[in-house]
Each structure stands twice: as structure tokens, then as C-alpha cells.
Length: 318
Image 1 (tube, rainbow, N blue to C red):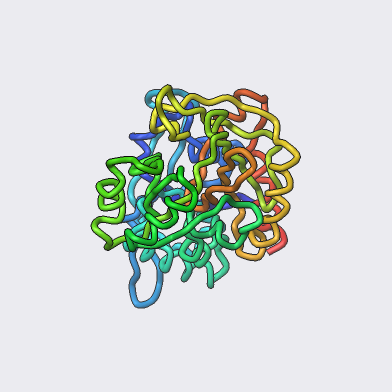
Image 2 (image 1 turned 90 degrees about the vertical axis):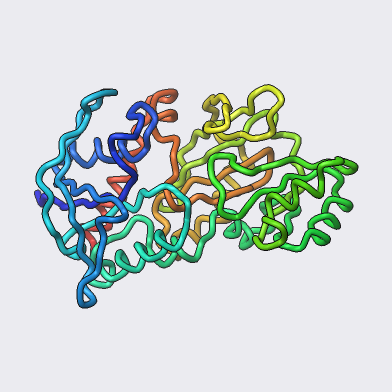
């Protein structure tokens, strides 16, 4: 049986919390299959005369909360010598991230499988990508002009405003008609009209949770993690103090997944996390979706096993 070489581009491994880190769950699965793992951070990637390289370290891990990893000596590798690379760097999705996707794309052109596809990481902004599925979404507007955002508020009376490049619930606000802080909030989020910003009609069902649904090659895991806002909060983000509970997907959840699956497959988006509030799709996360560990624990699943079965099948049929 072939020993595959897997690269992972991620944040500093010493900073992760193993009990809830999805990248760590993936690494455990890769290691259990006997794959060689090469660990890289964004600054380790570089290009030399059109060839993408990295200063990488072979990695071994143990499923425990401390002393959980061991790194070997730094070695220079050609990215195209790897069979598959997991791009698991958390946002911000900035120019440095975009440059990294070009390095990965060069390896992809030489036959390396990139999860997720480099071009699609650039093309599919996690908030704007929902525009392709208006039948699944609540009323939404994207603008940097305060008057257009205020016009949307006047129409819907109760809205959520958020930056296009945010994560973890940062800079997300609810504005209701007549809120005396309306102008200040719009100025802050648009940075005085200089940044495109999304407004959405407020979905009251947020009180029942912001559901994270994971899809592997277009097929949904049949359970969602509902992230329930803390008392007095409107943000269903674990990073913003939300609590979580697992629940089976509803008929509507499956329908939303069916709507988006063909586009995910077409774009090479193998591992995706969508956010659903009530009946509405709000985000499609393609950079570094999470919640594997929480769902595995609550429902005795092995989501990483399913993901790696998919990846291995693609490698074997490459």
C-alpha cells in the first residue's frame, strides 16, 4: 500500500487546542493511515524560478492536550513532491494568504491535490459566495455607501451588519430601526465608507443557534453543530462565547446542501462548512472549516476518516 506524503499549511501548532481543533483531527487520521506529514506555516512557503518550495518539518502527533507533537529537522521540499496539501490557515484572508494560494497552485498544476482548490479559495469569499444561491438566503445587500446600508435598514427594520473579511464574530452588529448608534456602527464597520460591508435581514431563529454543517465532496455530515448565542448576544460564534449542541439536519438543511453541492464539486471544494440560521444559508466557509471534534464526540462519528477516504480515493484515481 502506498505511503502518501501529506503537507499541511496551518497556524502555529503549539497554539492549537487539540480537543477542538479540526486540523488536528485530520492529522490524527493521516497518521493512522501511515502517511508522512509535512508541517508548514505561511512564511515557510516560497518560490524560486517559478518552482514552489517550502521549509517544512516532518510531524508526528499524540492525541493529548499537552506535549502532543514532535517536529523533525527543517528540510527544503518542492511542494509538487507532496501528494496532497491541506490548506488550513485560519483567516484573515489577506494578500499574504492570496500569495500562498499561487504557490499552492503551481504545485497543483504539477499534480498535487490541494484541499481546497487554490483558485476556489481566492474566488469564494466566505460571505459573498452565498450570492450564487439566493434561493437559500435571507435578503442581503453588500455596499460601502452608508446611505445604501441605511436604506436597507429602513426596508427591513432589523438587520445584521458585518465586514466581508471577518471571522469568529468580530465586528458583527445588530441594528434596529431608530437605533441612535446606527451611524457610528456603519462608520466603524465600513471604516468610514472605505470597506465593502454586508447587511442581512435579522433572522430571529439565531436564538436557537447558528448551525455549522460540514460537507465532504458535496455530501453533508448528517448532524450539525448549533452554536447558541450567550445571554444578550446575537452572535452564534464559539469565539464570541456561544455554547454548542449537536442536532440532526432538518429537511431544509439537506435541501440547502443539495442546492450548493454541484457548485462545490465543480470548484474543487472538498471540505466545506456552511452556516445556517433558521431556514437561511448565511456563510460558506472554505478556508478552514471547524467543528469536526465536537460532532465526532457528540455523535460517535469519525468525520476525518470520511474526509480521508474521499481524499485517498481521489489520489488513487488521479
